[in-house]
Image (cartoon, rainbow, N blue to C red):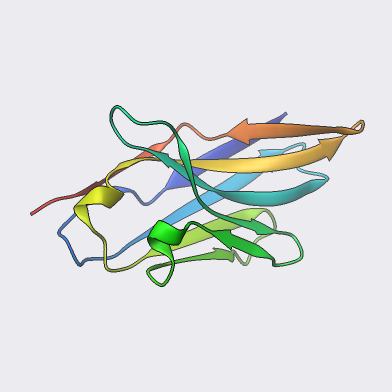
Length: 119
């Protein structure tokens, strides 16, 4: 099992910045990708950004140029730097880790952290 702990959410005014962090623990071997998803009220969960152990990233068009995903200094940590935040960025942000084990992909999720962009 993999446990994911997120931190860094909060309330920020439009145009402001926030930094989210996520740390994986437990059976973290063979985790090959980590990332962030978000869910706004009444909407489906959507991809924000992911990064592989090799450093390849996938960034949603809606946040390109504003959000940056990076691996942390500690193994199996991931950060999301969010700049120029907009009200439509509001939602619960979930950390995700994908592990390859026994020829199966396992997805793990954090508990979520609230991001609210409002004046």
